[in-house]
Length: 75
Image 1 (cartoon, helix red, strand yellow):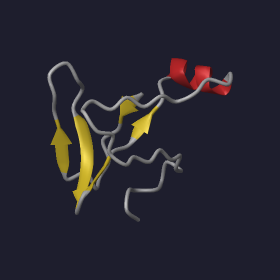
Image 2: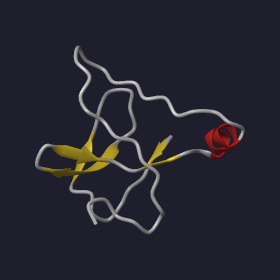
Image 3: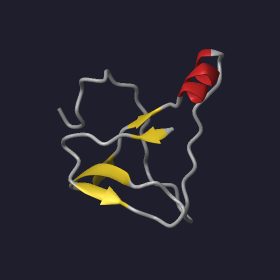
Image 4: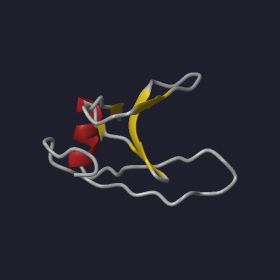
């Protein structure tokens, strides 16, 4: 998955060995936008699945959704 820069991003998360991640940070939420690469999209269209990995000792609440390209986070 490729992180997407979007106009309402108000923070960029950085980490060693990771691509920069634009996010909207509001209250207790960090909202990022991702798009599958062409290869990942082909895998999904062939019935593949999305996997989520979270680093840490507890699993925070998370949500995965699919949105139209013209929808900005928190609209």
